[in-house]
Amino acid sequence: MQFVDYVKAHVKSGDGGKGCVSFRREKFVPKGGPDGGDGGRGGHVIVRSTPELNTLLDLRYHREYKAERGDHGRGSNKSGRDAEDKIILVPVGTLIKDAVTDEVIADLDCEGTEVIVARGGRGGQGNQHFATARRQVPRFAQPGESGEARLLILELKLLADVGLIGLPNAGKSTLISKISAARPKIADYPFTTLVPNLGVVKMGEYKSFVVADIPGLIEGAHTGSGLGFQFLRHVERTSLLLHLVDVSDMTVDQPVDTFEKINRELVLYNPELMAKPMALVATKLDIAGDRSKVKSLQTHCKKKKMPFFGISAATGEGIHELVAYLSVQVEEARNEPSCHKDRE
Ligand SMILES: Nc1nc2c(ncn2[C@@H]2O[C@H](COP(=O)(O)OP(=O)(O)OP(=O)(O)O)[C@@H](O)[C@H]2O)c(=O)[nH]1
Ligand SMILES: [Mg+2]
Image 1 (spheres, rainbow, N blue to C red):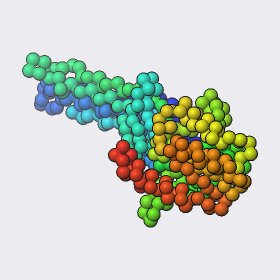
Image 2 (cartoon, helix red, strand yellow):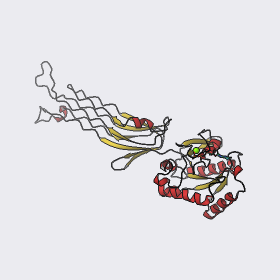
Image 3 (tube, helix red, strand yellow):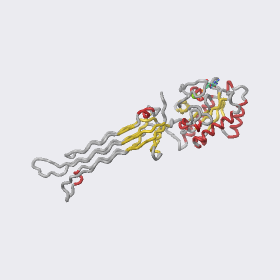
Image 4 (cartoon, rainbow, N blue to C red):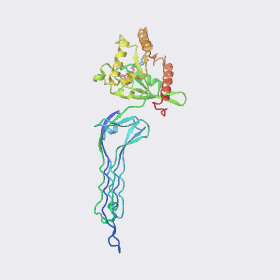
């Protein structure tokens, strides 16, 4: 399935219905008073998050959302019906912005939350409201209020606790397939992963955490090299980053330099990413040869006070320790007030 995480959409709420000008007509009651009903409210346009979606794909093919106008008021004090609201369903984790002002309208980061993005116009009042002692025959009523039109940007930022980053071929998808039920495509060429994958990792009997595997990054991603760094938005909300480095890669002499180059790409994307806790994971230990690269990375981590792990998805070496570390970190992050405590 295609994965879409950025779309623009036009929304327009419904106008309010017109208030009615009408007078009571009954047998034997000459000059009945005004009885024009009110117009109904125009429909709102509402964006609602649902766990059943995981891409903004539907919005790519349907970029205009219009709610209906409210019914006009009628005689005999009959109010017009309010129009139905137009609901746009989006995946949990969708950020909604006004495309013109760039203002964030809402961040639907919980399941089932919703926001009115364009408010329906109020219905106009019928002439019955305008009768006074001195004006007993009001021949006017209020028009309905206009609806709002807006251009929105919808941006999906997946919700995950741990984000996997690293060069293409580093073993990110292999790791997620080892520790969760996710089965992403794995292959020995770069850019196997083209869209993010999420995997749920069990943490004890009742709890779990979510890991995001994103496409590989290369130097120059900020200028669009490789797949660019657009997918980094999906690790922006994580509480922890794992930076994977393939220590069996013959084409890399100095893994420390490569590691720092990729870190610079993160800073260029968003300096806050580098402020997140990060651990370095040396991968493919089973084919790492004399492990001299492992040692240089380990020393580098010690200097930077960064946690270091060595793993092999092939033999299982180090995987258990890594998952135990992640469980503790995720648990701690969830206990911090700024985090989503309700996600388990
Ligand atoms: N021997 C060995 N091979 C591994 C290990 N982990 C991954 N590989 C191999 O390395 C290659 C790349 O693995 P992927 O998991 O697809 O790498 P990736 O980081 O997801 O790559 P992209 O999606 O292209 O960014 C595959 O051929 C894997 O089988 C490991 O621990 N040992
Ligand atoms: Mg991959």
